[in-house]
Image (cartoon, rainbow, N blue to C red; front, side):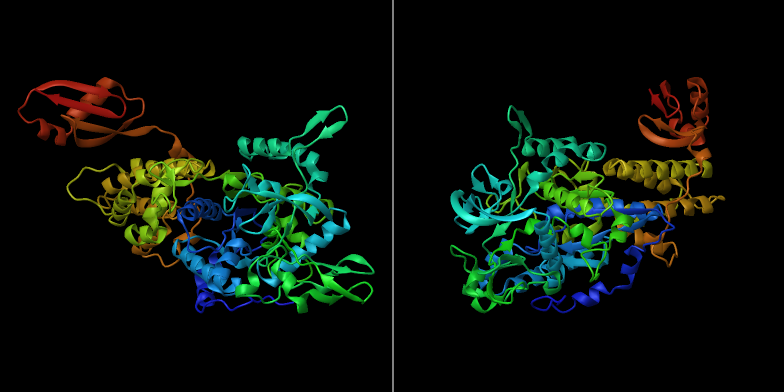
Length: 630
């Protein structure tokens, strides 16, 4: 079995992957620490990263860095869903092999992900087009076949005339191909199916296990798609069996040979993988049958059962089969005795959080739940459900509309990173609203985030300004650490960033003089650790300016003193004619009279009033006093 690409990866990729700092983000399999598995829907390698990637990677990286700082043994892997039509169609246009197009795009995206500062565990990286991966996709087909869950039958199927392949019902949207928009026609063909309808009741009933952690609208979409209805002749379903055959080249070959004497024979495990033959250029152009049918030397084989002449099946599997189990391969990279070690599945599964688009609700998510249940019945995984929690991020749009070439409203991620910097783009996306909401790039301000990050790096005691006491600054630090911790856990990243901005303002007003140096330094260190969740590059810069030599990403979450969370003292702002002139610590239950008296006695206020008449004093205890002059 070969674990190599059909064509070599571009030079330089391996040296990037061997970077020393990667060790920090690798899962340790340390049974002494609590474990959490964070999963991102893995990308398809079509060109460079786009704004949607920028959002989903920013979201998952905040969670990963937070969990790691909180002491969890974290699994946060990365890979590519690298089979499929886009690469094959591009290869046909270019007259080359799909692996060449695929490998270049993977290298481009990998470099961009690293630039973006995503803390992935690169040691577990996978590509579904590699024989070392699709060997186990074929193994999975064999397990379903022996359990009566994979079968071949003549049926009227959905046919896309443009892509010249069949489509599952889930891939037909209002009568058109969900990928290219071409009107779908009906054809009668003999095809391979997975018997997902055998699990229809369990797919519905097990949603009770998901209700605490999955969005209600996703579960509703799946219930409606399965469509269980009780009738006089028994229960009926809208769901049909999963059609997995594809009449295209760039996919995992179906591991079956057709023997005149023995009929359909599944290729034995020891003969897997059934590797794709090398086809390129005109050999890839689809007709009424798969391009693989033209590779006669590959098609001709011997029957594994009787040893007589036989022919290989020339269809490939739907790429949704590859992605229905990839999260399990991450658990045991390089493992050669099976798709994954059951003990690794017992250690990590189900995934604590899965982040990805809602458009996969009735395809990928449904298929992954089905395959997980089959593996659960085989005793290989500990749970009948693959993901404990699901987060669907919103879409990145522009001027109220989805980005598209035809509308001319696309935003180039690389150009935005060049213009504003990685951290400013990450902050702008995360600060724009809750992660489930759409982000309209026209309404966000990476420029403002640039300025904020500049203020962070200029943290220093300002001269000639009254500052909070060391005690009030410590209270602000501990309260912010406590609040950001809870807000990130709740997915309220925008509010967490706002609280961090408030703390930066507090620190900027603080002074390292007058015996306040230790508290001031503690505050800046807390800013660096909290900021590292959202803007890791700037946080590391700030950390090094403090003289620290270890990575800020390796720092544990700051400890909070519960006594400092009890608000016994707050900071009151004193204004003269609306302009801030002073700040003073006061008890949280200070009376209006006491607050007014203390404010008017402050030297800075006395100087600002001078000889003018005080017309009135507006007091809002315990936070504000405004002296209005005549």
